[in-house]
Image 1 (cartoon, one colour):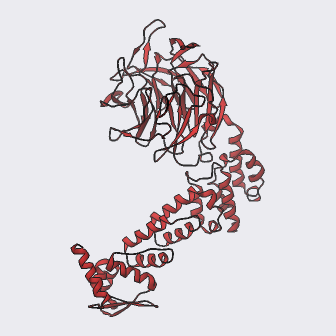
Image 2 (cartoon, one colour; image 1 turned 90 degrees about the vertical axis):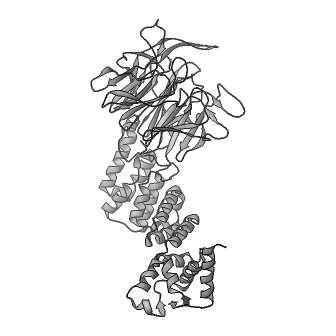
Image 3 (cartoon, one colour; image 1 turned 60 degrees about the vertical axis):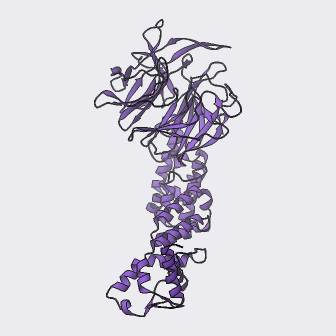
Length: 583
């Protein structure tokens, strides 16, 4: 026992013996003896009481209002022993006493207990306590718990007792777990409105505007919601349903919709689609009947799915897969290994569904880049594939052709050719300008391709290509991302080996600057942006880890052990953020 423990034990012994006690704390049920200086040392409340010009400063007996005998006894015992036991039976007595006496350490212990013991049954009673005593950590924990289990909790009897502001906070949450069925959110709102007998149209509209009606299935919109009396008699609600019906009426334009009605719900996620082979602990497969798909969630973890769920059952031509995110949708372009047929798939993150779109009308191409700007997706360069043999693909021409996909009309057209023929370049859009960097380049069909550091840019408004200052180092199959008004080119491969540098392009100065050398990132990797970080996944060589480059710190770190045990390495993945408001 150290000195502090001896002193505390001695003080507790004096109180137990009623020796030198100079104050009695009185409740309606009990009187507790203690020492003024000990209480004042532990509690700002008692320090102010005993050192000020109050009647209690000199009184032997001090009435304690607003606390129970059990709560007061627990606090005093803690002051003398540093021990307290919080239970279902006493938390509602200890917390008010701790709050009154400004015992923040006990309030924190109560908060931790409330968070640990939270269930679907008691979460709203805990919320009520947290609001009363301004415990924001518990309020936040209840919020996360309710939105994470909303489909079940919204069916409990206490759900309708929450306030309107709390209800709207839940319904507006991007992470509300409706089990991919937004109709759950509508039913919960309807239940609360009817139970609380809300008839004011403005109040009803204010609640229902948090429901993302565009994510409700069309038949439920027309058959259940539109016919509901609460909706049918409310002009503003009818307008919201009308917008949702219009959204469903033109599926092609859905990715271009800018509004809250179709924002997906759920934990921030990243979709990883494998283009090459899955390397696991048992074997090294070059092809499989169903390629892997993973969901990467923040904080980082994977949940495995099967690619057959996304209708990409046929093996894919190596290096033919490319993806672009547009709003809450992902477009995937590629070529099937069987029949050498191009395909375009569209993923809707709001309802976890895939749709077949019009494929690009050209011969199969590998090693191209993709970019998006103002409602159109651009497939840039690459190498034309002429046929498939048992030895692989035979290809001959590096192209400068550009194919443009118009999202609204689901049609393709050939765009203005790039000034360079490029294979394995990288592309990114910054301030409405498409930048294409690096890659193997050549000037004609017969020229030998060399790794370049050239940069060209497409200005859609002017409808022309521009030559920009070159990068400092040649690179192909590299990462290129736009973050905070600048472009970052990371790693890749040059003529002889992997490139290990990071450089940044500032459009204000129209210059590239080298930020870092000796960066170990596999070439052919995919990437996505989250906050100030560029996440780098996979590569041509099997890679087990995820690399993260922080543009503020100008530093690369490694996240190890991210992939599941059954798939410790993924090659040639395409990675895209599919959760709302992350970019």
